[in-house]
Structures are given as C-alpha cells and as structure tokens.
Image (tube, rainbow, N blue to C red):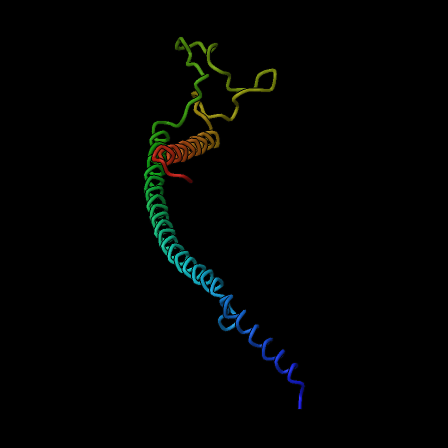
Length: 174
C-alpha cells in the first residue's frame, strides 16, 4: 500500500490547484478578464465593420457622382469643340472669300501711277523680295493656313483655360 502521507499530499495538491484555478476565475483555460476583453474587442470589430461599410457606400456614391460630372463635362466639351470648329471653318471660308489674308505691312501706292511706296515684285539687291507672292500684299496659302492653325490652337488653349478657371471657381478639385 502506498504511503498515506504521500496520498494526503497528492489530494491536498490537487485540491489546492483546483481552488486556485477557481479563485482566479479560470473557465476552460480562459480567464473571465480575458473573456471581457475578447467580448469588447469583438464589439469594436463589429462597430468598425459597420463604419467601414458606411464609408464604402459613401465613397462609391462620390465616385459615381464624379463619373457623372466627368461624362457631363466631356459631352459639354465635345459640343463646344464642335461649335468652335464650325466658327473657325466659317471664318476661314469668309476670309478666303474676301480675297484671303493680307500683309498689314504692305501699303498701297499713294498715287495712281507711282509705285515707290509699294513693295517691289522682284527680288531686291539683298535677295529678299516678294517674287512669287500673291499681288496686293495677300499672304500665300501656306502662310494663311499657318495663321489659321495658330489661331485655332490659341482658341483651343483659351477654351481649356476657361474650363479650368470655371472648374476651380466652382470649388471642385481636379
């Protein structure tokens, strides 16, 4: 038979461990304080999940509104571009119908028979002249086209600047 003192020590040890575990609040290996914090953490996770879902919905709504604004501005820009292109082509046609663009530096002769104030039609002694240029100070077709293209580019740039200004003054960020 085993030693009775050893059995008594074993029973007291098991009882002490059980009492200590019970007094410290262990339940299935987890303390009650741990359970409180776990519950609080789970509650915070649920609240954060709800907040995130709400923010995602707001973000999607803002993205849809921005997309609608972008589409509206692109449509408006296309209409304005079409109107501007038509106005420019009408202006070019009117200028050509009126005889084309003229060089403002060419002065007509002051008297009917003298030509000393007009530009020469042959090359000068320096090799620079208007030989081959249209008569009466009219610019060549290439020069006219260059000026028309340059004016069109300036109009497009001005239109873009007005769009940016209007967008900025409306309080929208790019």
